Length: 462
Image (tube, rainbow, N blue to C red; front, side, top):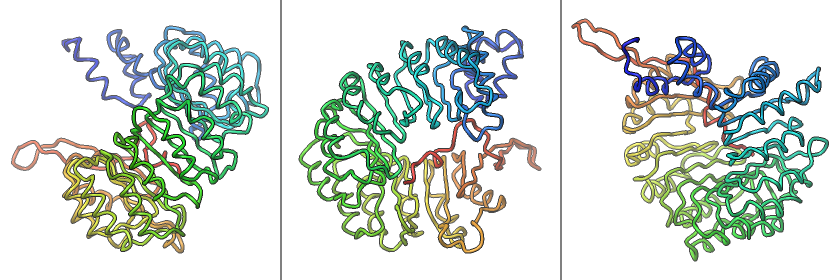
């Protein structure tokens, strides 16, 4: 390693993801530390399910407050734990440490602070002073936590995500978006069957959302196609990503499709996420979706049912049409709570030649036949199989490691990740010498150990 060309080292270290591995890499020598330390601190995330999460958060902010040189490496910060609120020893020293640490993160670009009760006014005020902050994701429950008027001072954000916004936060949206609308390109509003977000609210803020490229809204039962159109109709440059999840049962997909056909707003659409209410006539709804997406250069298509699992026969024609219109571009197809027939899966794998991520629902008994069609997906990197949980009478069905490995062996050599329901494996490759003395590569599965959350667990389910 002493003879390793200096300029190759960053390329090698870029393939190390796990923080623990990067930490040990920093201890090799000064050259390794020079490249590994920025990578170690570039993205920091502490989630509520992390063991000793609060203790880790205290240690993190103490380090960043005492070592500004390390804090300057931080580009993304994510806190999903009740910190600093919720500590048994919530002292001024800890609060001061957090504020000083955040102030030292002068290169911070993205901040996510989403745990209910963890955000306060002091944190918001110090974040406002960071010159490069362009992405903010927060919990919108302000009562007893922070003054929502502080949000208005974030006037140069590109991405805003608000989870469970309260009435106080919603009341500031118009003023806030008037200040940051010129730079805002992505907006996400996530509720949980909240009636606070209304058609009138969307109409009031829509005139400031003219630069949006990505718009996602979930769990807002008061929102119909009219509210969505009020946002889309003010768009000047075209939407690239659209998510409409868990909205009103009166949402008329055909009406939205007809409005969009008269506008170029979806001519740039690359990604869409939709939910279908179980009581809707499925044939009419799917035909309306096809009309909505007729002029879109779609690359990512995600869909799920809000109620019971749909059986596969009613959707077979829909999948044929989706593949016929968009298959040559699709890189990700994600389906939840809707069974897909093997004929449809085979068609998807055969004609979607650029497909890299596939999320499907099948019966456990179909696994053997599924293995026969998966080799057709020559570019597949991520495969996640869900079994319909409604069919589980005694226990949730799981994929045995031997079954998982068999699926991997049938898939293209490009596969890096396999999941089933709540389990995820990463695909590893081991080089060995065979009986003829030739080197060969064997694939195996191992527990998923990346610090990044698998995408299937980030999809909103309302």
